[in-house]
Image (cartoon, rainbow over all chains, first blue to last red; front, side, top):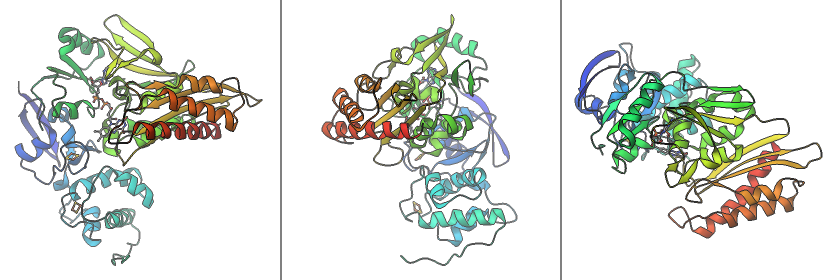
Length: 167
Length: 287
Ligand SMILES: Cc1cc2nc3c(=O)[nH]c(=O)nc-3n(C[C@H](O)[C@H](O)[C@H](O)COP(=O)(O)OP(=O)(O)OC[C@H]3O[C@@H](n4cnc5c(N)ncnc54)[C@H](O)[C@@H]3O)c2cc1C
Ligand code: FES
Ligand code: FES
């Protein structure tokens, strides 16, 4: 039996009818046509489907849409504002933090929570912090740099160099 | 992958949740963090007809010391354990375990109650509970009952919880002076279940004699396993290289690992021996 739920996504309230078994990621992608949230593994492992639910990063392939009733969600579509890119988006852009871009929305939303809880993480803390997000392209180094860049920007400090590092 | 259809309720009180369990019997399942249940439903390994979501019931998430116990509410998330000051300062074994359970997003959802109620020998909290000699509080239509952890795990995905009961609290006897604990699991990569895992809690008196030993093993038996002979090998003795080696040897003999993708039986026994030794030493160092 379908039930009516209301979820706020990127500030906009959506009232929809859902079957209890509908996964949150399918509500977002298919019913609400926001395809920035990706499905990589569909087995709770890769983190491509990561979004923020009431400020917490979660894997939307492993949550029922009906569980999000009354909650506030941020997806990648909600990161940029009229003023411009979110510091994480800028960090990924400036540091070549993405190649194909498939993992990127999930990476950035995970990093939003990471930086909120720990505004000045060490490299090790960043690597543990994104351990639930797989990237098949970058080798992670530039993702770490992108998050460090965003951290510096959010703290209002001088931005680290974005020159590529050849190793 | 999409789960089979089911009916869904999200009651606001424990009484309502228990009444729903009474009504639907074993057609119903509790939904806590959902991070064992939803993956199983997607794979159609589980297809409950009713889900009773207990996330809207207030008062099931807390970490407090009271009446000689550390009490943890069943709906406490792994991430809340990681961030708790009481846990960090006095029960580092949970910090060890939480850090190795899945990844940050899974830990934002997964609950300690679900981790134990799932009855999976591959989960990490059961071995920790064995080491700490915990008690589990189950709430049903007739009120609460307290189940010692040694009577909780019955078999593969089977626990002492009745279909009309909800696990509501975990009680751990408060640690006194002279006690230390530690957990480690060998994993192939982040987010993997243990190849083998060992939880240890050790207490020694002023003369260096071991007065308490709790040792639990992860994923090397059909159920979470207490290494009883290892504990006996330590209590009443000084912790020397020999006594620790004897305890480690006993655990490697008494576990029942199976050969699978994570390693051969022989390798796993060997890893149990190594980990028991290391965890006894780490727990002792933390005293
Ligand atoms: C990618 C991934 C990796 C993982 N890696 C690990 C790991 O390394 N180590 C580890 O220990 N776990 C791991 N897990 C499992 C995770 O920790 C689960 O969250 C946990 O096992 C179950 O807790 P839950 O709150 O999500 O329970 P749910 O999935 O909601 O429930 C699990 C079962 O317990 C029952 N149940 C739950 N709560 C109660 C209750 N209060 N009373 C009665 N019954 C209840 C449910 O009905 C269900 O049958 C992993 C999960 C994923 C998705
Ligand atoms: S699609 Fe959700 S974790 Fe991979
Ligand atoms: S940029 Fe391609 S998967 Fe990460």
